[in-house]
Image 1 (cartoon, rainbow, N blue to C red):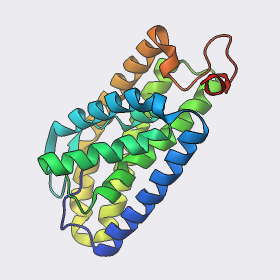
Image 2: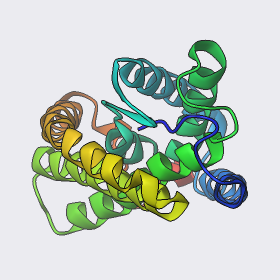
Image 3: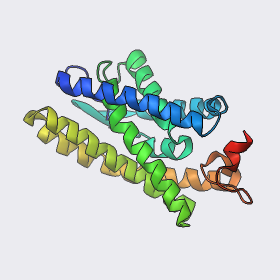
Length: 216
């Protein structure tokens, strides 16, 4: 899922950086308005580490790779801060292990981060519809992988006809990953809902929406 250096044309790379910088600023401001970011740092650190480790176990499919991503789960648990977590994780991977290119951190963050943000909103909407949390978590995590593949394939196809064939291979390679993340996400969200529901972006029993942020 990580695109390497020297693959994409300069306009695509520049566009990825511009959008990522804007989204980093917007998500940090958004998170700051809805709560104390300092209190989220421990959770942000743990989940960034989980994202970092999960993505390191990968199968190379040049010019990208296939691996667990957990962007849907990060979107559910971190909300807007998931974009920040993924940017940090991708930057560290590129610097420490050359997993993904330095010049394409912007577009890689965009491909993985936007699906995470979308799944946060879907999770919140599904919660209001009273969909069981474990099922909802599984759906969101599977959808995040699907949307990530759509973003990646779109970027490769835009970048040149020579990537059309590999884009199809990448799409097929991520089907088992989508299924795996659905089970992982559903299990994790279901477990957290039972033992530590305050980690989820939902009101606790007897708590109205917004009360948690107002009390911080």
